[in-house]
Image (cartoon, helix red, strand yellow):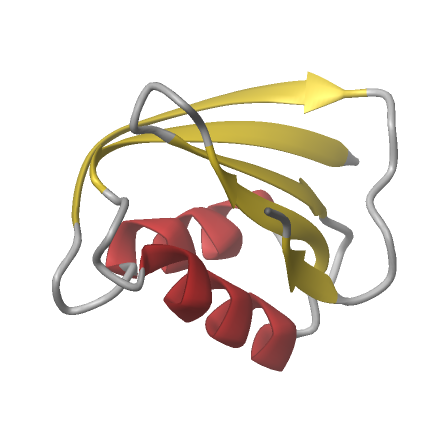
Length: 89
């Protein structure tokens, strides 16, 4: 399954994308993270039996030591994500 997550809070300018990329890649997820113009962060991820959405949401909630996640909205999407986990600019 593929999901789009929109994360709001203090998530830009606090190493949030780099932290998510590092933790997600280490855990074996595929997808990407990118900043949005409104100050939120968009994440697209592919999950399977080994890599569940709940485990991935824990990564998003953890973020960086400087970030503060206020809300995560999640919806399924059709498009799959690339192999590996990258930061998009």
